[in-house]
Amino acid sequence: MKSLRFNLTRIAAVVLIAILALTVVSIASNSALAANRSPGVGESTTHLHTDPSDNLPPGVLKQLAFHDAMRKLWEDHVTWTRLFIVSAVADLPDTGPTAQRLLQNQSDIGEAIKPFYGDAAGEQLTTLLRDHILIAADLVSAAKAGDTAAFEDAQARWYANADEIAAFLHSANPESWPLDEMKAMMREHLDLTLEEAGARLNGDWAADIAAYDQIHGQILEMADMLSAGIIRQFPKAFK
Image (cartoon, rainbow, N blue to C red; front, top):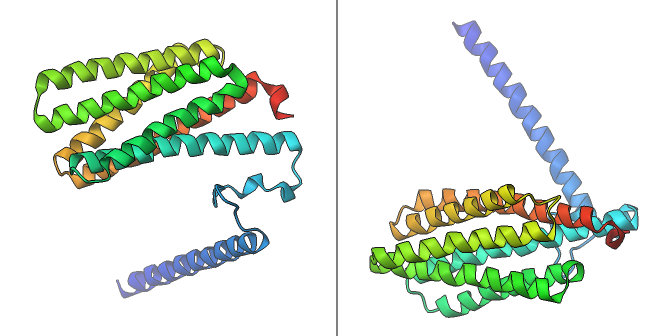
């Protein structure tokens, strides 16, 4: 038994040393990258692959930059939605300004597609997304008030709006964004947001955090689907 315990101890020590060695190498690599370049305003510190000094072809750099920008827009979407839920549930004084920042994000997303689909399409997406946010605010208000009828009405309008967004995206790029997939993705986003808001209202902080983690991962998948679809549909824009 002593021999077994001794062997297990030695194995654990070896594993620990290996982990420490990998950590040191990782820290050294990251430090070297940071020393070579500091991120500019609005740039992500985790996407150093868009650095022109990487000697990648211009087209590849454009694709990577667009991919990163799309992720930023949709991360802002779920981040400011979360901040709005937190503030609205607690009746914090920043609820109004937070709502305005969240609505601005919907305009930003609409602007991002205008170079590809035109001004009218960008404005239409902005309108649909603003409705998405405003109806969500109605949902939170109804839930706080315990008004079941108002909540069910807002919920029905919210999911109908999600289907409209999915249909709009599908019509813009049918090959890359199949209608069923877009509807499923939008509805999953709503389901998870409802979980998040419900957990926050009930004071279930663990469930609240878990729901947001899921939302964050899911929205990045959606952002990647959108950026990949646009790059595939408009290859000349990324040369």
